[in-house]
Image (tube, rainbow, N blue to C red; front, top):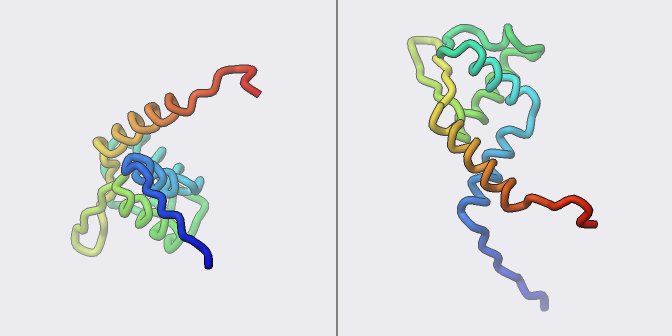
Length: 109
């Protein structure tokens, strides 16, 4: 009989993993960069800015929205997309904290 080891990860690590998963595709990073560059919300077609089909872009937008990194509000038949500035700042601070905890000194190995 095998035993199952139950491991509970810190809530912050789980949150980081979810955010990193949402960032784990270059199209999603490109969408975030685009929204940051235009410095406004966009109701237009983001697919025109990326070398991807509209359907594929919409799937990536959904992942970013589900992760809480962007906001998407429906306005008629269109969705208005914006960066969630608070979530982006939380991501930045959390990433800085995480990387500080795993900082490796030179010549360790």
